[in-house]
Amino acid sequence: MSVRTRAYCERGDSVEDPTSEDLGRLVSGLTRSNRFVIVERLDAANSEYYMQAYLRDDGAYWLEYRNGGADTHFQTTCLTPQVLKRVFTMWRYSMPGWLDWFVWQPWFHDPDARDSGV
View 1 (cartoon, rainbow, N blue to C red):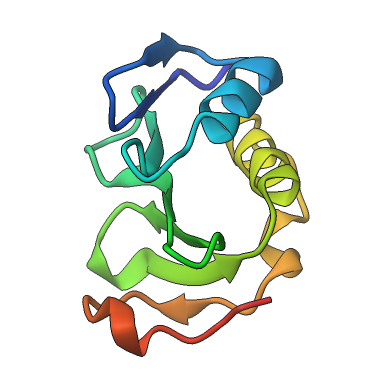
View 2 (view 1 turned 120 degrees about the horizontal axis):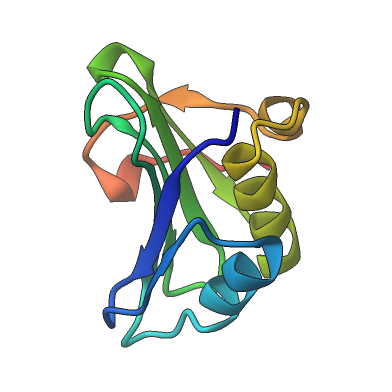
């Protein structure tokens, strides 16, 4: 069974059921005026199944995923767009292993207090 997803960015670009190439284009397009990419599950039980990244001022990315609710919302730091593209692709296609690439922390709102995951 195929997972239904939508990817979109801050400037409004949106792709239904994005390919790895689509995800790469969205990640490559991140700038100071287009800071985030979100990939959300369209076939999930609720709207709380997603992965998102935010381009920081230092060029690294905050990366988060949420699997259904606040108790399954985690964050880390990703240093390169290449790794970010791969993680988005693996998450989108339900491929194993992407969780092991980072040190994940429970999500909290204070961006200045976030730890580096990689």
